[in-house]
Amino acid sequence: MEQNLNQAILRTDISGLPLEWIHFQTAVKLYCTDQVAYTCGTSLLVIHGGVNARTGEQSLLEINSIIATIGSQHGLNSQQYIPPLNNPALFRRDSHTCMYCGQTFSERHLSRDHIRPLVQGGQDTWTNVVTACRHCNSLKGGRTPEQAHMPLLAIPFQPTYAEYVYLQGRHILVDQMEFLCAHFPRSSRLRGRLQ
Image (cartoon, rainbow, N blue to C red; front, side, top):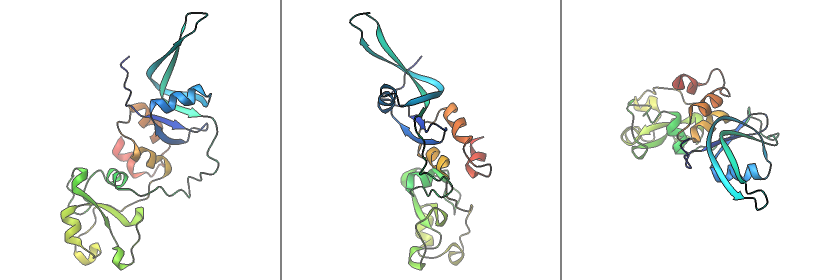
């Protein structure tokens, strides 16, 4: 088994609700403090521990791609949860595509555009922002898409908790992706992209 120490591990609560991406060091701490209720997915790596002085046996810890930890997020109402808005997640939500010209760009050539501009009373919320290339954002300026005669290619949406966990991930494994997709709403716009 090839071991990848940089591969993120998906942590869930005991009910299976995706919570966050963690590094293997955090996973090891959770295993060693008996916080892991069960595991799913593939075996990512095996950590070799110390040697028992009496038995001469070396301890081994197998880390899986998905670990469920003890406890649940009773305070987390996924219906009312509003994920923090940040550009990397926004750009990933919109597939790094300018919602005005339709071209795909690298992150450094993209910007956050407010559909209803802040100067016109718009808010900095998921449903009022889209990904725009710097050129289109500059061209649109402080106008609405209608005022600028620049129609939107897609309607923005606020991701659910599970969708936001997906948007935060990098190099997501197939089993992790399947697990996350099972938590997306049936109407999820991300679901169609991933299948």
